[in-house]
Length: 273
Image (cartoon, rainbow, N blue to C red; front, side, top):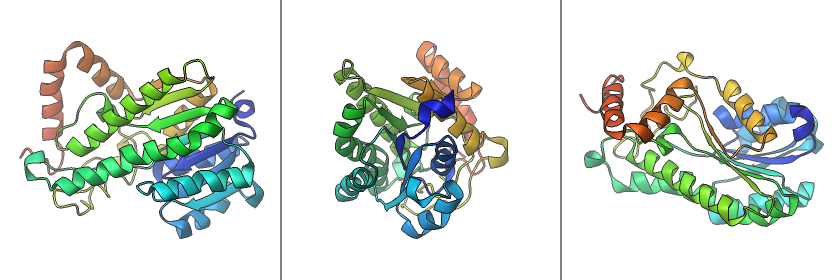
């Protein structure tokens, strides 16, 4: 059933060179979709493309820095030029950070907003006419941090909250146009994003504070995303901890603040120590 629902759909995935983006591209291709892989590293995309889809007629790689509006427009233009339509846009590209706000250079928050929020806005702006034409699906990959804030991730949480608010608004604006808008919130997922997370001065932290092998795999996360697309879901929150956190935040916000503080304080190299 899932294979039939995605067969021959044209799906754009930003941030497709690693993690959830790469796993999703591979799964979509295996389900018969025509996949457009977008990321900053064009050379890496070209190396990965044959592992995603051996048929070069069913895959497209586009060098895309989502912080640049001209790159976002080019991504959409190249997709339409090659495949003639767009059925699904998965806004997955993004970066993280880890530092206390009092220590933070404000350029770090600007970088987070440029990548996570403006990248989603710009790609969506250029893709929207084609998504409305196909009555397709618009996706934003956010985070549990877009529902319940994470300390030492001010820029990350703010950008993910912003993406959620943006997508929820677009959904309501097009409630009668056949467009489905999905806010997709993984919990902690095995990914390179934490190694590349920015520190207070904007340099990458290099080491992850989490035990990556204990987290949800990118492949499992991609499977949940494909299932959500099949069902044209509007919101998905993953992992037991993620669902519990969102529920607790809504019902017991003060308690959730204390529990979140304690959880982050136990991280390796916690900024609270």
